[in-house]
Length: 304
Image (cartoon, rainbow, N blue to C red):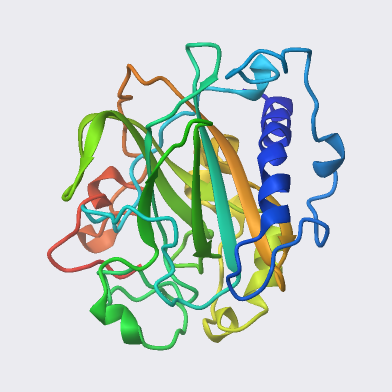
């Protein structure tokens, strides 16, 4: 995949972001796609090669690429609730996610009925269910995080247009990782009271944000109460090893009015990729943040 492929795919996804930003969703304040727009991308919205009239297919085959799976992110918990709004009162810059899943082997048709699950840390770097896992640097105590195993966690089933939307807040930073959101996509199973069962785990990935947006967000409260050295994208291990090609989101909006992040995810519903760990254990046996060994909850949560 080339850099131009990434740019074209982000432009394709931006069409959905513009509509989402115009609608807004009433968390903290309205959304606007006219403020702090990702310039250089928005100006190319609608680029294509004449396939726009084919229902259910990408307007340009190059815009839909097969996303490469990464090793599962840390702090995953089973049983993520089926819901759109995952905030549970956590404070921060409002963020709406619009993730479109497409069937790459079949003309990149939109894929309805896929299960999309996300989880990420709060503005101070804490994950629900892991109140004792310190985020690094200097951060206030976890507080209400100790009583919840579900804040900033959730899943959605893609609609007829292949879209899954989430209402959340911009994630904080934790440990030696750049800010990110963990995501995975499953198909072929069914949703029960216990979660999504059966089927295939088609993709595991991480969503990233341009540093310019992150810098602006972290200058605001409550993020500015977590001090320390944050890892930029260029130094993030997962981003450097392919996460940027498959997870860098297009953002629109502003930090005062809310952000909208979009990405198109191309999967093969018939395959469950082999996921090799990309991180080595740290000293003391604590898995690195992007290690497959850290996907399940440890008996004693690791310190980032």
